[in-house]
Image 1 (cartoon, rainbow, N blue to C red):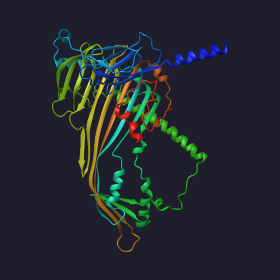
Image 2: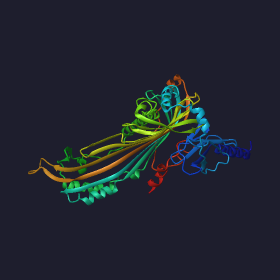
Image 3: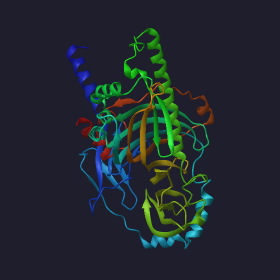
Image 4: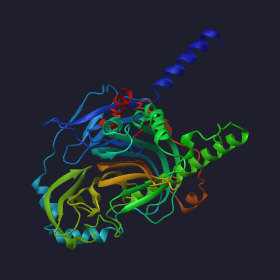
Length: 509
């Protein structure tokens, strides 16, 4: 072959390869209100489908060249299904039209079932409508942690060390980050029976950890100043008595603050390098097993299990139910059933029940009161938030498996107490007390954990395939200091919400 023919062939190959994978991004909006539409299903075929995020945004990658007949099928609760051609897709917003319910269909389908009769049929169907057998599930999992400091006060009443004054304390509080967040994302495949008690195996394909290091408390500028004050006023053989109300703790002084001659700089050796490699291996194993447990628990932690706080079906007598409406979900005609607690239960929400087989195909829930709270001696803790959405989808066996789930958990921790730190030294003549700091502290911190899981593919496997699959703990998350839209390029994931996308701006300040 001549050289020019080789160049032409290589060029054609590169062009074909570049068009063999395409990513399509858009936002789903209500045609009348232009409000974003969350939790819509965007399907290319049985093996490629995603869910729109809280803001109605989605991102789907097609791993072959697009032809004129290719389309996306978009469906969502309460909206008409829409086919969107891909050949001239331009990433502009996609508008969905509300779908009205034909009352004649209601009369034919409803068959005058009461809400109690529907609940009985739901319970009967729990063992047959959902698929509990061996499957391989390809999934994307994201967990986000948000820390918000609502109150941070330290009032210094007394200090025998002049440099440890209110101005110094306030300067320390000023540099303390008031908000912080981190995000872990995993793409993987999990094998096993779909059951909360079943052992699972997993293969992590790719993972990242998004963390803004600039939000770490940086005391570098204060370290020398603090050490100089400490060495000036505090004796080497002293100890501290820390008292807060009735609580008292004794702490010995760390001699390294005095620059002890026995503290020497460590030198890297082969032994240290081997130790580091061992730690890296342990870290991989730890990350792998911990995340596998978390994903498996999150996938199965729902209303199907009778040992669950989402007990509105198994303990239905404790709730009030009402058929609020009828709607369509993915060509299924469903009852829209609202529920709320009669007395002391925790949750209210809405469940969507297929009128044909009485399977619960979606649940939206939120707690109506704190799940737990504790307050004693100025220390308080309250689990104030638990809300989420669970969506099931029919598989090739005409049974239901999890398609999507998200949940937000909120906890508030507070401390409001007096505190006294006293330096004592038994080797000094006279009074043992050397120095004293006394004041009041008042902190309130909120922690919010948001978890999302989407299952892209669910394929039935045999027990022997499961047993023969060998796990490998070879992946640790790539550390990212800011949001990077290129990291998941070419993969189907849950489109990040605004908080994650804005992470790039926050970290770059």
